[in-house]
Amino acid sequence: MAYFLQLVFAGAAQGCIYALIGLGFSIIFKASQVINFAQGELLLVGTYVVASAVLNWHLPFLLALPLGLLVTIVIGLLFERLVLRRMIGRPPFTVLMITIGLDIILRTLVIVGWGSRTIPAATPFAITSGFNVAGVHLGSSDLWTLGVTVVLCAALYYFFRHTRYGLAMRATALDQEAALAMGIDVRNVYALAWGLAAAITTLGGVLLAIDSLAIDPNFGNAALVAFPAIILGGLDSVSGAVVGGVIIGLTSVLTAGYESRLPAVVGTGLHEVTPYLIMILILMIRPYGLFGSRKVERV
Image (tube, rainbow, N blue to C red; front, side):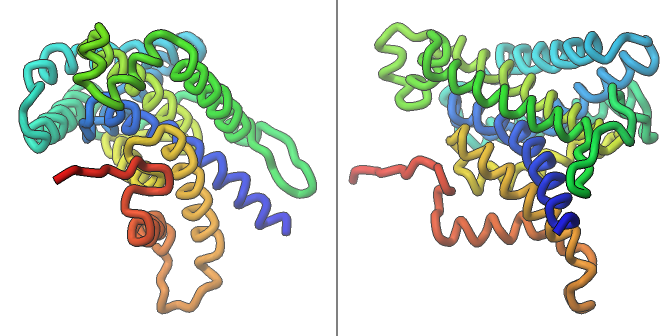
């Protein structure tokens, strides 16, 4: 029983990380109907900046983290202002390909700046930090991950429900033309969405790096694991990204924990494909995801 509870705790913490990364996808898509395939490389840049600030520049972690967030926010804002604003009204496929181009550029810059070798991740925690409860080890990094996710979700709920800019983002997501007619500056909403998404995704990446203890230029591929979470929850649903992330995290960790007890024919890499199997199953039942908005077209 303790082993199962240990896996559930670890899966919930990992799911929260996927939720944070998935939130970045959802916020941008909800505001501008764009899937940002460079989200993983924004995460990559942020984690490398934080690691360099701690290990090379000898800054405290609590100063290095805002620096990493600031760098990725600036990248997101510049990309939105200098590139995406010129693509308004263009086919979605064109914009999607541009985000893939940004993905390649950012990964190349990381390799040029830091090399292709694996480097230690910045972390304020010792590997064994935490405490035990009924045979379950509650690691400090996992507890902080759960706490940060809960606080951030509460802050986003308040932001979208009770602030001027949050309401503007919701209005723009519902109907861009109506939002323009009401005097909402849609371009500023897009910029806010990109900056907010970059910061949240980077935070998720830093927490994942703390859990992984090391990073390399392929670290941004974590966004590909988070992608099933937002598809499962609903691409345009912020709450769906959180629920989907937790489901994917729990499924992946529980499968990894018990796959050694499965028949040999199943193999040892089942946990790597389980998130995608869950995503396919949910989409077969609910094509728009668990919380996605069903689109109705009049003909």
